[in-house]
Amino acid sequence: MRILVAVACAVLCAAFVGLTAVVQAAPADEATRKAELMAAWQAASQAGTDGPSDVALTDQGVLKLPPDYFYVPKGEGLRVLRALGNVVNDATFVGLVVGRRQNDDWMVVLKHIKDGYIRDDDAKNWNADELLSNLRAGAEEANKDRLARGFPEMAVVGWVEPPAYDATTHRLVWSLLAKEKGQPDDAPKNVNYNTYALGRDGYFSLNLLSGSERIAGDKAVAHELLSDLSYNAGKRYEDFSAGTDRVAEYGLLALVGGVAAKKLGLLALAGAFILKFAKIIVFAVIGVGAAVMSFVRRKRRNDSASGPA
Image 1 (tube, one colour):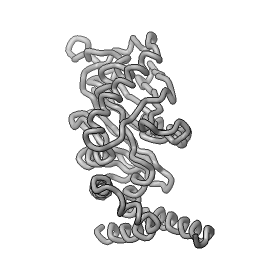
Image 2 (cartoon, helix red, strand yellow):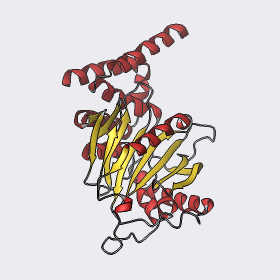
Image 3 (spheres, helix red, strand yellow):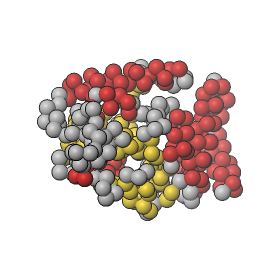
Image 4 (tube, one colour):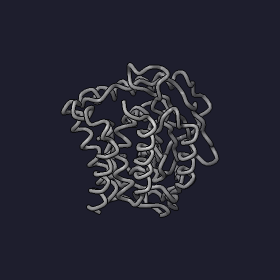
């Protein structure tokens, strides 16, 4: 394992030699953040689970992890998310899922919120514009922490996919387009693609973090994982007992634009460079060194084609 990490680090040095001056000129706090992100990914790669496999999600359910997917458990997943500048609630966070394929630049954040049975009868009455305003307010609240830790503020642009609820499967889907404040309107933007599975004691949240230029294809990942998640017997939505079970103080509406949504917060991936820079380490450690070598060969071809400056 240590040899693989060392090899990956050596490859990174060669692959990013053209960026040396940029890295050296970077402020110390930025260099520290990059180092922590790489260390967080290394820890995640050593603690995670490769698909296909069945991953137990607390005492509530099971995720049938597909091939070429990688599951990162709670402790290591928290470290990765915080290294990316996100505010995360330890009590609700369950784990992360990332893709092992070369072009997988998405991440899925799994949480379980045990606030009680969620009544879904208000799904018919929600207003998308009002929900969007509430989500913008939630993002502004999260920005206070991002600024305090030296990360750029995030702004909600609008819907990628307005809220849709399936009353038969008790699944909810909605998606936001977000960007860093001051970012040009035509620049690639962060996307939070949110899916939820309601249960007897609360709900699972599966939040796909992607980019506006990739979401058309990446959202299939979110739907696949949502369908691969099942509740244990006795924990399903239909197992609810009105006489004994706790009922949440809010309804389905709150999972989109209310108190519950603000509690979950707006998550973000770091810039493409810093994410790929760290994630290549994971690929190498979990046995996908071909992705790294392909990256290096592609860079060498591009350098040869461009010739001397």
